[in-house]
Image (tube, rainbow, N blue to C red):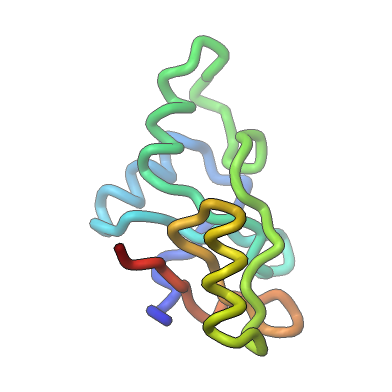
Length: 111
């Protein structure tokens, strides 16, 4: 498990989130809801795809775009179970959350 990396609020705009992601030189951002709980994960490719859509405006917020919103990997899950769940859902990366839903880290599948 890696550190969770940058976390941003889900009401942030796509343009600002893309700038944060590029500036931090990370492959993804974790999204937080109003209570600070993990509510999603977004990648540069997802942001770029939505930014280029015909419906996109500079006010489009992260909470308004389709992305993986869970269920996330529980900190109590065994590594084998977590890997199997990620493969079934075709995820390369999954947030690891505690019992209250706060991000503890990120699991990534390696080729």
